[in-house]
Length: 410
Ligand code: SF4
Image 1 (cartoon, rainbow, N blue to C red):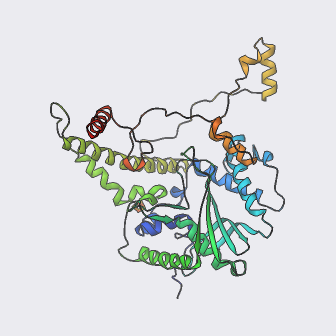
Image 2: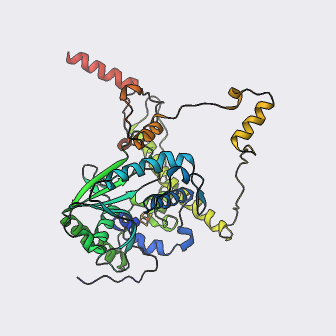
Image 3: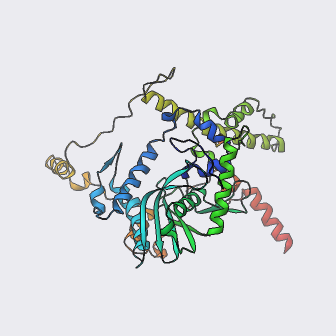
């Protein structure tokens, strides 16, 4: 098969955007229209970049002690004690388990090129070979969304799809490292995400794929790249929009604004609300949710433009709230405050860490917290989209209805 030629400087078809290219080929052209420096990621991504750099150091031949990483800066981000204990130590412990198998060999932060699409490349966090199994590991240090190796499809929650970024790196690693992958029968794809918005989520998520599945992905990805370069590529909203820098110019993101402007909610009748009224509430919420994403994208790009010295009419950068701190180091400050007449209790508040934080630290030390140590209660009732409901709650009327129905059945 001939290679599809793209002439990239920065690959618009790299591993980190693979899901977006597959879901919305039109995004490739739209993203190219956004000035490069405005596509840069936010402060959260700076933390992720710093943690990735720290993991690369830990996977080096002469790794530093984990504790020595506290206070180390990578670009604009300085690693904290929590970063080390809650992110690096548990990730490093998981990786060590895999690398400590007798015949394991590995590459860390390895540049790999994707077959059949010239100019498509990426950097795999960790590529391991152990016996006849290859492993591709991707570290996720973001907490806002959980990332899985296998997750429900955008259009059909009953069907599971394999993480496109992992498939990209697996196909690219196999292509770039022929000898390393010789004799490998199948490849295990793993996401390691030590912290996420779901407090009880497992840290490791894996799926094993065959060579045939990788070949199928290569063909599908090449087709999506070809479509992206065609005159009428598909434009489609989905989970892949999350980090798309083209949101401010995307027609699919502007559409909810127009719909919102035309939203009419029927006057509620006296008595219980009509079906049409409830439907209008749901429709309005959907539109407002869609617009919220656009607001974030506009805000981030305007901030970046101002940081770059480009004027955004009506907007300016302003210093954050002043955060007070002790001028001296902690022991000196504590001693000075005690000399002033304050007791140690006045100065030091000893608080227990959360269950999740302690579980992470225990895992990194090979310990398990017994379940009988842990209680749980729900903090309240909130509104969520049906597909995101984890513990459904029946309204009092519904409870009465189901109780009456149960009595009748008796
Ligand atoms: S925001 Fe979503 S729909 Fe719009 S171009 Fe990006 S990926 Fe496509």
